[in-house]
Image (tube, rainbow, N blue to C red; front, side):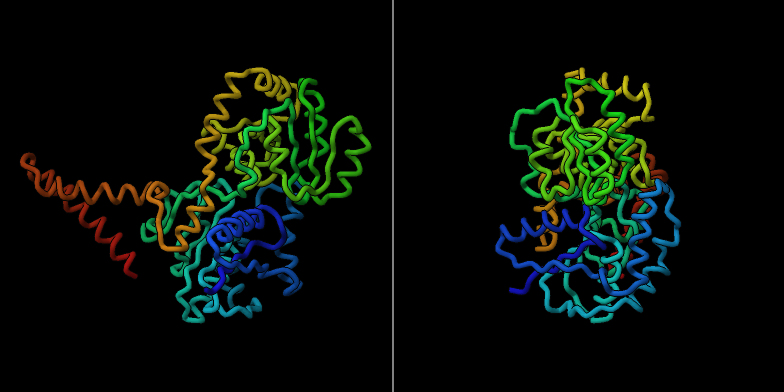
Amino acid sequence: MKPVLLTYGYHKSGHYSAVRALEEELDSRGVATETRNLWEGKTETIDRLFTIFRAFAAKSVKKVPDFLISSELFDLFAQEMPFDIDLHTYEGVISTHHYSTSLLAAHKQKQGCSVPLLHVHTDYTPFPLRTHHLIDFYTGATPRDDAEINIHNRVVATGIPVRKSFHYDGTPKEKRILILGGADGFGELEKITEFAAQLDPAYEPQIICGRNTEVYTRLKQRFSSHQVFGFVEDLSEHFNRAEFVITKASGLSVSEALNCECIPIFPPPIRIWEDDAARYLCAQGAGVCIPQLNATGVKLINGLLNSNDYKNALREQGRILAKPNAARDIVDLLEGRTPASTLSEQARMIEEMRKYYREFASANDLPQLAEYVAKQIEGWLRKYESNNRN
């Protein structure tokens, strides 16, 4: 049997963590995998393009220029980017970064290949960001309500895949607050640590600096009484033991925290999509935002730390959003099985509209109104079905 190709973004961040969760699920089914980075080391231009996002984060720049996700940019990728992969040699392809997915879709078309191609969105912002008719399924946590009608049967709300070690193991929670800066240690870690040092002293802060050795050194010197770590390959034990995590609203860290029943607290966001994700998660009752890293923020979070009712309510909502079977559902899609419970809202609405068309078409009263509604539904469904045949 041919292997499944898995690919992520430019470096080993949350996109790669999602790939590892999918590797784990495929391995449990006896399916071979091959994981590849399509970008790193290919050209200087690609290196600069990917690192610009990290530079923005380091400088606390929220808004990313729109051209970085434009169709023209993606099309030029497909034309010029070195690509030496024969997609016919794979049983399926799963990508966790939209740049990679777009490149794969373009080369799937060039090679005349029918291999199933799935995109996994690893943030809590709406997906898909960009569509292509040769992407078979788009998966993630929050489907777009305004996406084109012809893709709604390909948009599946699986959630974000995490490894099985991030499923809560029942470890008794400790009065502990994790502070995460992501793989690169961004996120104003020093300011956040200063903020955490003012919280209820019954809670022990643990700071994870990722690969940012400069921040690690400074924090070790300034906060010698706190536990400070560099890059940690597997944070599941930390998540399972901690009650809270202060983290940017990036998809993988939040999904891992929710699956471990660890309550996320979001500092003022750095990037605009983190702002959107934090608003969504807080609106769903699964997290709390710190409005500012000041005395008011300290009072707000201390109120949370000392309210069991509030903590229990947040954990309960977190369990709803966690989606521990996301990796399973994504691999089911690859193997041709669509989990009905994860269909997008639009796809569920289409099923209902087909039923109501029959009811309005056979109505016994208000004949003109019933006929009008039936014709509108019929036209809407015809457009949907026509788009899906194209």
